[in-house]
Amino acid sequence: MARLPRFDMPGVAQHIVQRGNDRLPCFAAELDYIRYLQDLRDVAQENDCNIHAYVLMTNHVHLLATPHKVGAVSDMMQALGRRYVGYFNRQYHRTGTLWEGRFKSCLVDSEDYVLRCYRYIELNPLRARMVDSPSGYRWSSYRCNAEGLCDLIIKPHETYSSLGKCDADRRLFYSEFVMEATAEAEMMEIRSYLQQGRV
View 1 (cartoon, rainbow, N blue to C red):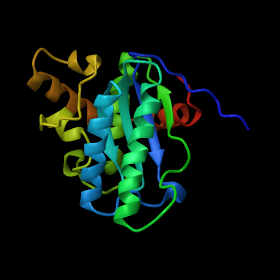
View 2: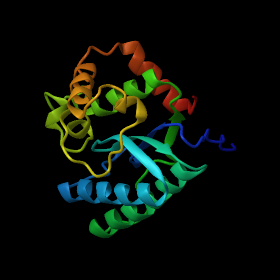
View 3: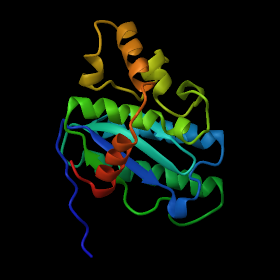
C-alpha cells in the first residue's frame, strides 16, 4: 500500500510522535535521554525547525515543532534517527531498527489547539502515573515552559508568547492552563488527528 503524503507547511506547527519498535524501550539509561536531547537540539537548528514542547517517554517521543521550509520536519527526524539510533545500537551492542516505522505527525492549525498540544505532550508522564506532578519529570519541556528552567532546545510558539506581557505572566498562565482538567474527548481528538495525520 502506498504511503499517504504528509501535510507540510512552513510556519505551521506539527505534533509529532515516534514510537519504539514493538513498543520496546528506546531509552535505557539517563545518558540516552541526554544524548537524544543533544541530537534533537542540533538537528532542529540544522534543519530550521523550532521545538516548542517535547516529552521523552520510555518507549516513545512527542514533539511540537514548527518548520520554516518544506520538508524540514522529515529531514530533521531522519537526521535525528540516524544519529540517535547509531548511538543506541553502539551503546547496547545491537543492530537494526529502533523505531516503529515512520514517525506520525499532524498540522496544528489554530492557536487554541497549539496550547492543547503543549499540554497533551507535557502531561504524558502524569497520565502514565510516572510522577505526581509534571515538574517531577526531567525529560520534558514542562519545567522550561511552566517554570522558566533554561532549555536550549525550546523556542516558544507565538501563541505561547502571547500569553502575557512578561515571562513570569506567561509561565503562570501556562502552568494554570496545564493543570486544568482535560476532557477525555480532547485527548481522544488529539490522538485521532495524530494517528490519521490530519490537520
